[in-house]
Length: 302
Image 1 (spheres, rainbow, N blue to C red):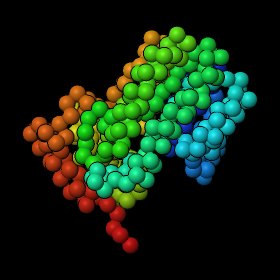
Image 2 (image 1 turned 60 degrees about the horizontal axis):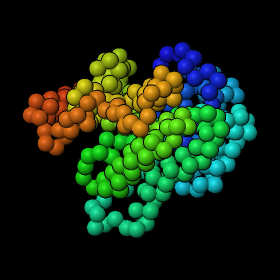
Image 3 (image 1 turned 180 degrees about the horizontal axis):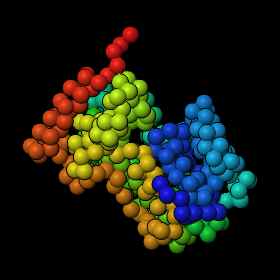
Image 4 (image 1 turned 135 degrees about the horizontal axis):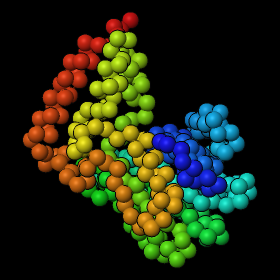
């Protein structure tokens, strides 16, 4: 991500900023000049990420423990940012959990846990920041959704419900707060390479195989999911963060109420189960080649 100063002087809050897409978004916002509060429920992870970023960005990044199921913690974080930097221009919501079960096995507790984290947590953060942005004369709110907010997947009932709710909420609020120059959008990723997974795999490989791994295999991992997306490689957190930064900046000044897919074309075709034979064949062949290559190049177990 290049640093062009797109967000010089701006103030941002990232809920769920300790890892993956959240951490990539924090890094991208900082690189473009913003001051950022990194909020995360995991103190150890969030503080470690903040400390590492502070080595480059100094006091432009701070950490606050925030469990979005506790709205008072959200309110405290928002007020802390106002007290330190005078206002908020950008809110990024990267919060979500999934409990995958057949519907007849889903308990009321399961429903409540997913709804409170994914949907109410996002709602509460937006509710807390809107008055601050109105005083500021506008702002940009970006929530991370999912392609599963628009299509079924199988036993993702609660996750799909919550992400669809975020899409609808975003459109409604974009309509309501457009006159206040508050823009709201959703970034909807496809299948994401799990954080640090390629690095973990690399540690299990012979040194002479590393160059080929990073060149040929890391962009594909996980192989099966990569081949459900027409571009035929995996999405990574930085791909999502690049769009978050765009939506946070004035480059997107006329974009609001939208769901922007960062999915390699997945939502345009959604063939995972219906299946195009050539994609299915390519995925199976590539998976077989990967399995063979990995077995030949992994370090011997002690």
